[in-house]
Length: 179
Image: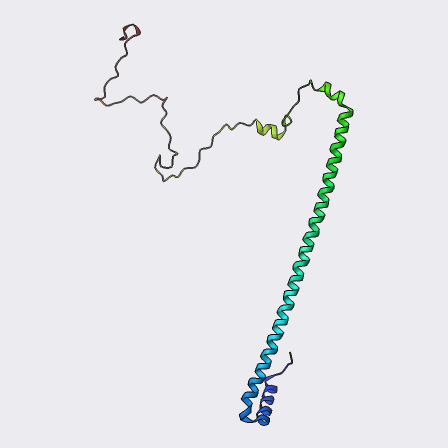
């Protein structure tokens, strides 16, 4: 700031020692330090206040920009809404003028839904032919993760080779059924 180097400070210290003497030099140094500290604190407070003001101004400017963009968007929406209203009113007037022709066409079936052959129509009628099995953990034993195949109840059981298994009892014919 003032561009005072070490040599200049040394000259000032020697002159102060000679002029003030060794008894009054410490008091004068404390007094000078006090005033330098006060000046720095005052400068820092002014600088911080200036920064706060600039920051507040920037926030106000941004707020005004956002507010103006909201106003512009609002006016655009109002204009487009008004255009839609005019278009709807025009359509109502057209229907009112050509109402007789529309009444005769009411007997014909009205198609709803997507146009035939359109991607939406094709997607509506698409049928999944291959069901994809969810991935399984190869290390998990069957049944823990719920993805083990279930026994098919309609499939016949394999013949038993166990000799101790009882043979199935034959069912009597209908005329011999107990009453």
